[in-house]
Image (cartoon, rainbow, N blue to C red; front, side, top):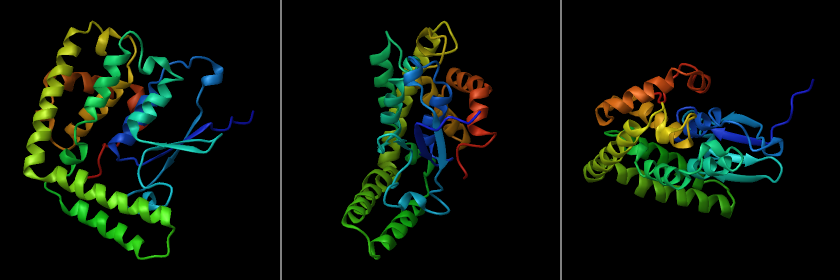
Length: 251
C-alpha cells in the first residue's frame, strides 16, 4: 500500500531548541479531532551551522512549518504549536487552555540563546559575517530586506542577550518562572502539569528547555522537582523517537 503524502513539511535544525520543541510536541500530540484534521508531517533537516541553508531566501529561520496544500509557511515555534493544537486539542486542552498558552508564551520569554551561548560572542560575529556576504551578491530586494532584518535581530536580540546585564536579567526571570512551574507540578496529581493524564504542549516545551539547561551545564537553574519530571519524560519513547540519543546542543 502506497504511503500517504505529507500534508505539512517541518523544516528544522536538529540542535535548535525551538525546532526540538515543535518536534517533541508533535510526537506527543494525542488524537486528532477527526480524520480530516489529521496532519501527516514530513520532517526536513536544515543544517544552519554547516551549510547555512537557513540563509536561503525562504528559510532565514527555523523551525518553519509549510502547509503543502496552500504553500503557506509558518515560522516561530509558538505559532506552529498553536496551529497544531487546532487539530490536536490535547496539546492545549480545556479548561486550562488560557493558562497553558500564557505559560508557553512566558517560557519563550527566556533567552534560550543567552543561556546556550553565554561567553561566546563570536557566535553572533560569525553569523553576521555570513549574512553580510550574501548582501554582496546579486539578490532580490525581498531577500535583501530579509537579510537586513536578520542582521538587525542579531545586533539586538542575540548580541544584546550576551551582555552581563541581559544575562543577569534573563537568569532572574528564568528562576521566577521555573519556581512558578515547580509549584504547579507539585500541585498536580499526575506526572504532568494541571493534573493532565497526557502531556500538554507546555509540558513538551518545558521538558525540552530542561534538557537544554542540563546539556549546557546549567542544571543549577532548574529546581530538583522539575529535573526529576524532565528526566522521567526523557525516559519515554516519544523523547527517544525525537532525539535518537543525541544531546540538544552540539557544543
